[in-house]
Length: 127
Image (tube, rainbow, N blue to C red; front, side, top):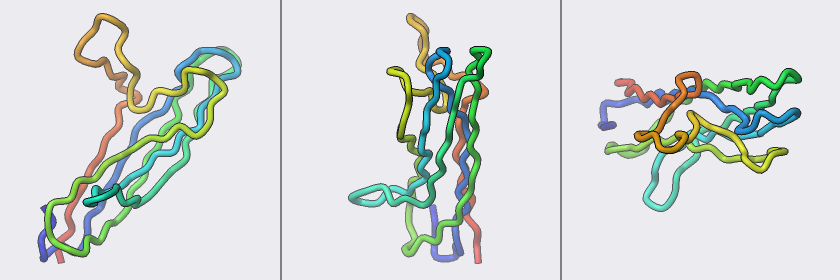
């Protein structure tokens, strides 16, 4: 909850991207978008481009992101911050894993690899 005594909100995110194939050369370009929910849209606060590529030895490298932004909400109230991923380019048909791959059948709940696990943190800064 952001109230009138708040001067801003520090919003931070980190996580990992991995090509969803072990083919060589395989790569994926993913935009990570940090936004705040608005009534009709998700207002973009910041964006980072992440490039993941497999090595010549066939290892699926993890490309990490980590960034923060200070949001200055105009009106006190509840704000929902989100992290979205957008696949920009890949040379495979399978794309990329962002913050964890889907589980292999028949595992449930979803298996999330710890080295890809994404986080989102919001800290309200008072005046």
